[in-house]
Amino acid sequence: MRLNQFRFLDALKKYGTISRAAEQMYISQPSLSAAIKELEEELGFEVVTRTRKGVVFTALGEQVLEHSKRILQEVEEIQNLSGKADRMYQGSLSIGCVPYVYHSIILDTLMDMKQKYPKLTTRLTEESSYSMAEQVHQRELDLAVIMTSNIERNSWDATFQKYELEYQELFHDRMYFWVGQNHQLYQQDHITMAEALQYPFITYRNLLNKFNRSMLQEYNRNLDIIQLDDRESLYRYLRKSQAITVMPMCTLSQDDYYLKGIVKPLRITDLDWETRVGMIYRKDEKVSMEQKEFVSLLMQKIPNDAQEL
Image (tube, rainbow, N blue to C red):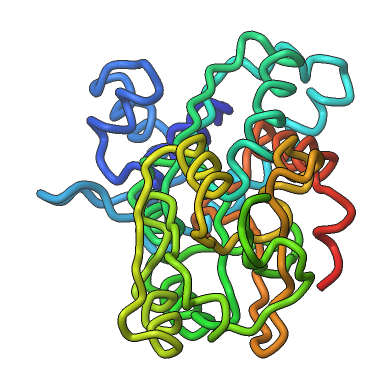
């Protein structure tokens, strides 16, 4: 048995077809098929069954796959101990991120990752949480950093189950209404939902999902909603108008707009609106060394004031 055969098994499980697995492993389809056939002959039983839709692991094949994953994990740990870790970060990492923490946390983390491992190819996309859940399921993203709330908890439980996703919480926070320095509410420190939603409401891109929209409209059925598609426009509009928006503290806690008093958070007094920021990835895939390193660097960026509700 060879390590490459175990890596091919892992790719077959991940991509489902010999053609796609071969493409991702940068070998020809006949070479991958021959390697699997050689392994099956050595073991004395079929590991995978070929079908029109791809390959399906046999019952014994699933057991072989579990053993092979453990072997590959042990090999990776040995390579780390031998000082070869840096040279291994030469693959690719595709990450999705909810806009609320894109600029405040994730972008800096990715820059640190790229500086530390320059040969690593990275791709960072900014999407809504529900969109990223589907993309992780479809393997278009290796992992995603999403934001959920207690208002939509049941929906997220169903989403995790539907898409076979593992969720790892990174930190928790709370939603605040934000106003600009020229707003007539700027001198206040707290506000009720009904008071806040008498003003035009700004939303960033498609982040106002059906659960949040429905909840906001319970307080004002005729809520004036303004959707802006870039971050700078949102802050400029907030600064110069009587509009209001809602964001977690982590979005702006390290930003000049907040530090210089250009915008200000107002605590919501009549609604317990909690948020959770976490990482999602497929349950059936091993977390890679690159993903582990990214999360390790990410945890160093989390502001202290985002840890307590």
